[in-house]
Amino acid sequence: MSGYWYCVKHKTVESGVNICPPIDRLGPFDTQEEAEHALEKAQERNEEWDNDPNWNDEQLED
Image 1 (tube, rainbow, N blue to C red):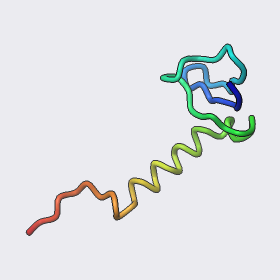
Image 2 (image 1 turned 45 degrees about the vertical axis):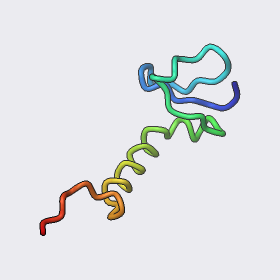
Image 3 (image 1 turned 135 degrees about the horizontal axis):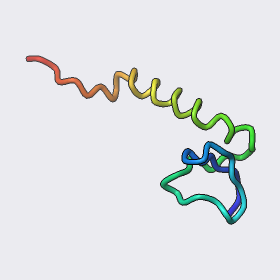
């Protein structure tokens, strides 16, 4: 397995074969630095999706 992963359980960057299970990690990322900023990237994406008018879950009134 290649790449870097961010473990949300241990709050560390992981790589190689001895990494946490998929439920506990974000990635893969190409670099260790990208993995170190995984939570920031996830927050940015969440904010973009929350404000995307194409994905507005509110019901329109007739």
